[in-house]
Image (cartoon, rainbow, N blue to C red):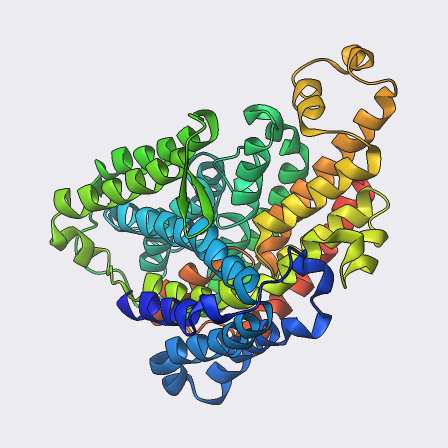
Length: 486
């Protein structure tokens, strides 16, 4: 983690910002050209291609590649746009990257202290049961929390299996993404909606969409896994010795996981209206308290959990380091893409904003962008865009979502606009959460699950290889979701 901190601090401070010309108060998203996203495309292509060319080299140099792309963007960006450019970079690290990596670290640390023991045999029935449990848990302990608790048990259960890639891929689909659809604790975009007035339990309205996706995916997984299992059954080693009864050690880590979720929820419901100014970036006190609380929970987990339990879990810091290195570069280079999107119809991606004219377009455009960009700001961009198109505000929506539709006439002259926005919000929410499964970088736990699987000998597909799975399996289901609901 020290290397990550050093490289993004270098990127931000490489030239004293006092010598730069000010941007004149311009909205950077309105003046940035589309080609300014080239470093972001470059780091994505590096993640996709370098492991195919020389995996060993990539494994030892991915942090340097991430730093290089970050600096390729940061230095000219700050030189050209001065204090405004410096502020954008500082803001995305303080407001987005640090909270992002702190939350992942906390969940990874606490989840890594829970050891599921026992002679679990990776049969189709057992694997399906684990996926169902993880899918249910994901909305309540977060997709990252559920993924970190269950990825190692399912890998151990299938240690003797030859065909394991499909198990991890479906795990990412269900546990690391779609399972987090029902509460703001499940996935960051939904939590961002909660912060902007969407009631906590409104997301339960996404249950029909989630059920359709999950039932089909789980049934498909069971069929595929059964075929694979039967093919290799004769090659599996015979069971030897006594069976170890099922059991869970380190359950007290659930307290720390609960503390982390509580800290996240607290930051959404407690607002003392106090901000701390850090070099021009205003940081809300509740967010600082949240991050400190998560760090405390992680440290308590490390203190309370014997390292022998983590060893039994084959726990290492590699996965979180890899995510830290790569996403430090991704968050840096994603600045122009997000700024242009936020500029809406005044930015270089105005044609994308203009194309969102109905539920289906909100679902597909939000989802497609969420597959490659941070799905939380993408969600917020289209949330705000939908409000603007319908002439509504957050306060009105917050009230409307808490009362029966029959009473909406007391809030707006045209209640149909409220109904339209709710349909748009549903499409935006489903797109942001579901399509995070399309790529390894679509949602944070995707890459972590991949890294843990590879550390335990599973030869995971490349960036594009994984996308073949998502295109073949998920995209047709998204078409079904569109036909049924949008």
